Structures are given as structure tokens and as C-alpha cells.
Image 1 (cartoon, rainbow, N blue to C red):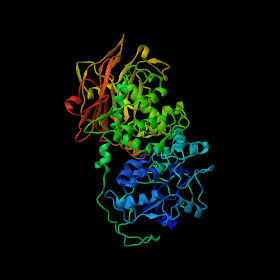
Image 2 (tube, helix red, strand yellow):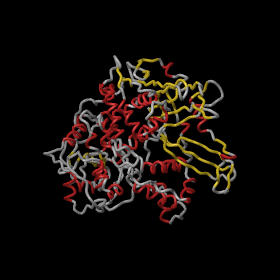
Image 3 (cartoon, helix red, strand yellow):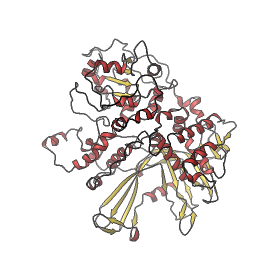
Image 4 (cartoon, one colour):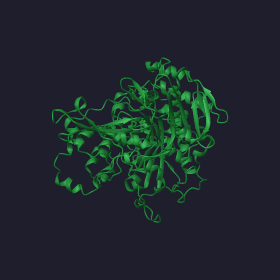
Length: 637
């Protein structure tokens, strides 16, 4: 029955596959045009459909999240796991069906969700001609969730060959082909195809899964090893009237939306409010730099929930080359949990992070002493280390370097196109919630003033360090950004060895933020190295709300805009508005100084000052914007 639906009315059917990501990537129903994978352990009883979209689909593609948001546009939603039947459903599948029907967040399905009787196992057995995308040892299926990350990733053939939500295998393979292919003359056939939006040159880099663009007509009977693209659904694709039955008989189900209670939002729940952790951290001897950084990280509720509810355990990569095999991630979760449990807005308490510091010291000798350390360096180290523990692609081989010819061709691409290509390459070996929340990308370009040859690099960042203009006792954050993007002249000993001129030439260096993160962490460069280390005490006036569109690359033409529409978006859609939620202050000098943190904790608590174990509530905004600010935390709204 499902086969008939997919052959004749695939555009009307949405499949939700509730199996582990590795199981799904290993094999799935690839005849479906619209299919979503959800992790069973990420669907919680208290969730609504809105929370599934926001929290459970962190590792899904933009297209999958869009499909889930538009689930009411489909005539039929079919759910499946490995082997559940209508009479014997797994707890996870039963939970998902209940959420879809009773906690729909105001999005009503046209029909009650249908279970694929027998799940993927029954489908696979009945479709013996359906080949698996790859060969080799199969992962363990069923309802046993005790399988560790190591149990599957230890199989090298699966680890390297498996498909992921970013289609890494196809992407890396085709970057060189895409760049080199631009110089080849187009055949008459390709000239005709260029009239269709489906064949923009940049499209060649990505598989059908990554792009919502139209695809060539394929034989439905063929089995493709790659996952089909969930195309963005338009209302025009649905029949204007449901009075005419489709050729393939739909299951006999109610045609009216299932009645549901008013949507439930966890944003106003006790749990969400409790994520405004109000617990101090004891100073263990010049550890104020660590305490202040941790308080501002905890200010990101999305990160805090990820660790407190235990979701992070499903993402630890024991084989990540640069990770601690989950040691730091587990200790960070333990500390957060203790802070959460002791949180008491009416009477703030404190926690002694002794074990967390021991773990940090065991991983990095810099933190074994009681010396004062730089807060920004510690924060970058903590974020990088958590990322490597949770880096699902941390065991992938390093990316191949682009050839000289490929680099030259990339230089001719618009910044937005080139930065997107480089970001997709970056995700090949870097894929974690830390990347999703905190990481952006900076473009650095050198331009020879003699021959105009350029060399551009694209690098990920967790914090952006802004220079402070030294033209008075007071400046603004906007002036710091302007100073950051202002071209810098390189000459004499600092001149660039131009590959075209074959000699050092006067050069302009230009920086630009090519991708903006969900949480933007700004480091103000107050310490300056001359004959000796000095501190710039310039008062920086920073806003509570920040707009950054002017620092993001513009689209230069309609052709570029069209080509960008074929590439993954991953949140890069203006406007880029941010709200301040954290400030780290520094008093004194780098050797003899002290750090504190302001963190916004919501209604009733307001801006709170964390001075190690001491917590002060409802601080005035005029105190928050102060001349001792060293790091700023802005969250996109």
C-alpha cells in the first residue's frame, strides 16, 4: 500500500522515520520524496511539536525542519520505527504519535498519523529488490538503546562511508569537480538546461538531499544510494479539492483534523524558567576567570538544557581525534546539574567547582596552577574542548587541500557563495551543538596592490576579537566593528609574497564576518603588547540590542541570489538582530586582576551580577553597560 502511494502520490505523503541516525543513514525508504529522521531518545513526554522542531531536530537539515513545520500541508503523515506494529508500538513511537495529535502547537494534521505496520523491517523484507546504500556489517537494530557511539563508529567502513545529514561524502568529493568544471565549455544540452532553475552551476556541488531545487525525473523503480531531498512544499502542490479521491487508495481515516487542546509551550513552564540558573561558583584561587566564563555559558538556555536533560550523551564521539572521550562533556554536565539543583532565586547559593577544575587541569597544563589566566583564552578552550567531545564527525579524515587551480577558481566566486562552500567543507569534520550555537566564520583576504591578485581564507570562530580605537577615552561597539573590517596596509617586513608577482608587495588585508552565529561572543582587545603589556581602559558604549546586517556580505547580483537559493541556508537569513544577555568584566591588570559577570536572568531576577560565589539580583542596566566590559554575549532574536 505504501509502495503504491509513493509511486503515484509521493508529493502528498510525509514519512517520519523514528530510528537512530546511524540506522537511518545505513538504510531507509529512499522512494519517498519527503522524509524526516528523528532520534527516538530526543522525543520527551513533556514536548510539544514546537519543542520537537526546536530541540529534537538539532542535527536535522534545514529542509527537514521546514518539512516538519509544514506537516499540515500533506494528505498523510506516516510514522515508522524498526519493527513496531499497530498492535505493539514502541514507547517512543507511541509518544511521537501522541505529541503529533494532542500537542500539535496549533498545526493540525489533515488526518491522524498512520503507522507503517512492521516498520522498516517489514518494508525491507517485502522489498527484497531494495538494495542498501552500502555493504558491510549492519548496525544493531531494535529497541535496545544501550549501544555506544563506539560500537558503530569502530567499524571503519561504516564510519567513512556512511551518509550524514550534511551529505559530506558527496560534498567533499565534488568540491574540486565543481571548481574545475566551471572552466569547461558547456554542451548544447547544458545551455538549454541553464534556462531551468534546476541547473545553476553551484548546484553541482550538492546532492538532492541538501537542495530544495527541482530534480531530474528518475525511474521510481530504481534504488538510489543517496537520500532524496525533502523539497519545500508549496500549497499549489496539493489538490485544490479533496472531493476527488487519488488513484492510489488512501487508508480509511478521518478527513477532519483531530481536535486538540490549546498548544502547550515549555517556554513559560517551570522547567524553562528554572534554566535561569541563580547559583554562584566558589573561587578556588584566582579562578574568577573560569567562574565568569561558565556563568555566561550557562546563560545560553539552549546549551544548558542540552546538558541538563542528558541529550548530550547521545552525541559524544568516543573516537573523536581531539576529544577527551566525553570526560569534559560529562563533567560539564555534572557541574551544570549541581548548579541547576541548587538554584534558588530567593536565596542564591554557591557550588564549589573543584572536580571540574581538576578535569580542566588534567587536560591542559596551563590551568594546573593558581595563576590568573585570561578569560577569553579559557572560554575558547572550553568551547573547543566541548565541541571535540561532541563532534560527531571528529573521527573523519582531514579535508584534502584545494589544488592551486581550485584556489584560483574559488577566488573568482562571490564571497557568499565561496563562504557557503567552505562552511559545508568545514562541517565535514566539525559537527556539534557548539558549532550550531556559537560558531561563525570570518573571511580574510589579501590583495596585492601591484597586480590585484587575491588570496582568501575562510575560518570558523567561537569568539570574535575586536580592536579598540585609540582615539579618545570613549568609543562605541560600532566603532570597534568598523575598525575590525577596515582594510589594513601590509608593507615592508609585513608585506605579502604575491604568488603572481613572485616577490613581496604592498598588500591590503581585509577581514569580514562571512557567517554570523546564533550566539555571538565578542572579545574586546583591551590588552596590547608593546615594550610591555598594557591595558586599554577605553570606555566602550555597547547597546543592549545589536544589528549586524551591515557587516554581513551583500548579494552582488540576481544570478548570485538565485545560485544562493540552491545552497544550504543554515540560519544565514537577515535581519541579524541580537540581544545582550551576558557581560564579563575585568578589573585591574592581567597579572593582578579580577573577573565578574553580568547575566540576564529574566523577569523577577533581571540582570544579575555573579562575583564568584556572590550573586546580586536586579542590577540596573546602567551598571551592566560599564567601562570594565571585556567580553560581550549576544543571542540572536
